[in-house]
Image (cartoon, rainbow, N blue to C red; front, top):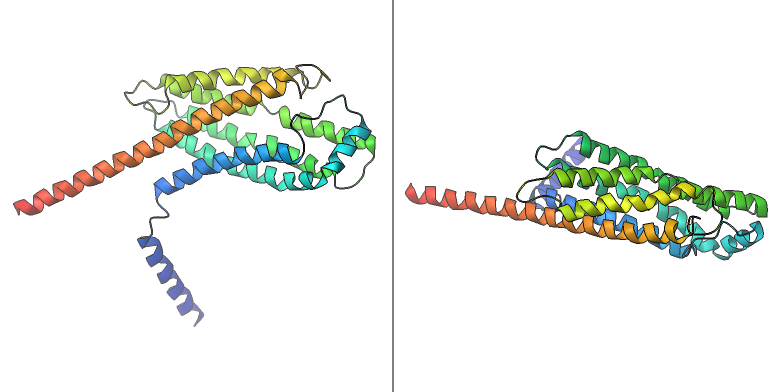
Length: 269
């Protein structure tokens, strides 16, 4: 009885999946692109919910930090799952990017592999701070310990920047090396992916500076890289979306050609 039920359910699911276009490669790729956009959007919502726009100054005392965190307690609670989701949703986006890089003619396979490896490592720059987000308001540790946890939060958020730098430069290398008539990413996108990570080098001083442009809430350490990163993400997403549409159009043209050829053959017969 049980085996018959399983076979019946399997048969129904197979028929539904065979008739549905939901599980097409095109829809999967659009889903991966949407996943990336949601990842970046959730990360922005975290900063808003926790009152981190602008980020808290390293100069704040333990009492001031504790007062801020508990004043935004609900936002801090919401930030933990949002950050975890942001990190997880970034992976499908990175996989789609890797797939498109692999379609560039004569590109060394190491380049897209390195991009995907760096992307997989970079999610820990989101996952680890999520732990400290939760700790800040998990219980009242006292001002000094709260300040210590706050420092861990911000340092763990900014310090893993080299993984994003590697990702950007692999995209730039791949785009610069693409000399085909219809490149996956234009040279302008390559230049943006090369230049944006240069703003990340200001992170070298965040463990030293407590104020000024090189502190973690400074103009050169937070605001400039944030705007540059937004420009890079917008550019990459635009061309990734364009590549999916171009691939779908080519597939549709090929299908139409096959249909036409079959019709001609039938007419001849």
